[in-house]
Length: 181
Image 1 (cartoon, rainbow, N blue to C red):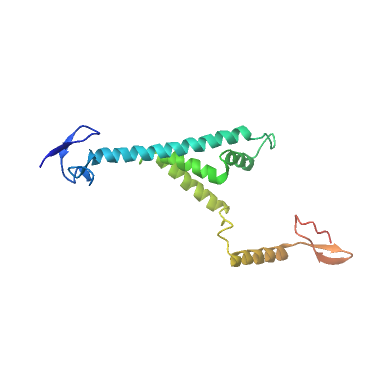
Image 2: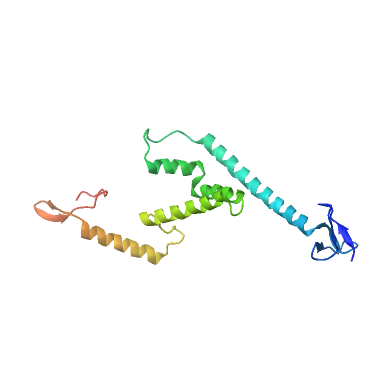
């Protein structure tokens, strides 16, 4: 069996499907670059696409930074700080995009990638423990919404303190409502 020299790396390999991809256009029926070089080319092309996406996301972030207005209190609390930080990334979706771009730009199995995954896991646990984990509007069914409204109404009725109006005991409107009767 004849050997063939790869145009990519210059190494000669036996002309078999183990080392070469098929190509009907070529006289010998095999491509001009070996499988290893083609795999490298494919990997480089994928990395270029990821890099291009990262550059686009970062450019969008810099544009957003330039357009931000100063506002908020002089001594922001954590929620405001977090909200501003997420705004800089273009909202939760933008933050997720940037995080994913950073994740994909790290090497497989790297300590950085592992730390990023650990951070997401810890964040998920904290959000669940705090009770802040909720369904998005798209995930809520009409039945879920009706059930939640009913439960909230029951809690408000049961917990509403009583007050005297014109000498008679009346239910006091829950805190935050504008009702004054």
